[in-house]
Length: 216
Image (cartoon, rainbow, N blue to C red; front, top):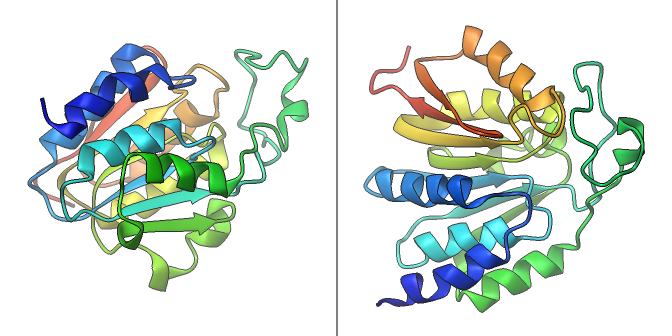
């Protein structure tokens, strides 16, 4: 058993909001895209448990890991966001603004514990409408991305960015698809109408988007 396989069970046990099936999809997607060029991205890092799982899977490659999070919690919901499951029992969606905030150093510590190289870690601090505007700091090519931004606007902005940089065969896993709010699913459905050649497979609370081998 190699170190990646040795650490995996413990990392899977630390996941929050992601079931075993979705975790298996993430791991399989990373393996399927391993030979492709490009970075791995995570949009919506929170406490960094999924980050550590992803980092463990790509640690022994030369792949760069780009992480996007405000570290200030969720933004205010928009008109496309309707609460489906009150996961924190806050009584309404407006109460979630600022919720789920975790410090950046918690994420860095999780990466350190799986021995992921700091030189391959790029953390973009802020809401994605701001961080995606700094094109000099962004990856030019992406092979895999995990999008867990909960609400419509951030999800749509992340997908729009990925449509421009995802290589043929790239995979994007979208979390909270028709689960926490309507936002993520609405964003995916709207984006697919205008995006390049992508295939979608829906799961229970998640969706897998795969870039076709020929872009538009």
